[in-house]
Figure: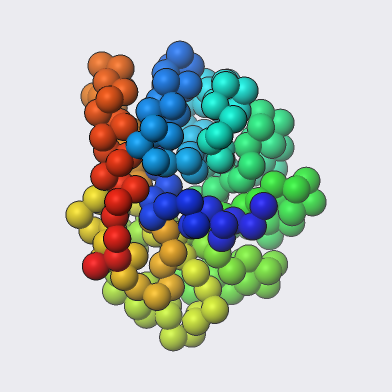
Length: 208
């Protein structure tokens, strides 16, 4: 798949940490009920791959991706459990070329002009700005618009439901990554209705 197509599914891609496998399917279903189809499950827990496998098997309408993909092993494992795309916190040519070789769509992470140029050299032009707010946020993206006018971004890291409209108003931003859709306290309570509510709010976000 073309990773830019992910942006057509809605304004926000949730960045999800799953610590209990049994939460995976009901969480995914709650997000879908709220209008969020693209799910990025990060490799930040010991059960992440197992959780992704459960989502791929039981929630086929989800467009499932893995996050925090840092090396070739992560990329291969993500593909093996049914992920359609992968998101990396940074970029290496080795990872970019391997992902293309195995047919795993990659959204590479960058935070500097040099990293953008390295990704562009490997024909990646839709990139994740990470950690977006910490490295300069909206002002940095405005700065990148001149020299990198053909590059589109998904800012992730520090973006909120309040700031997302301002990010989306930038011509080089097509979608935002957000961690706020699956708050740890709601997951701990298994309050899936609250997650559906947050998903509906995120689905309705429009550029400011």
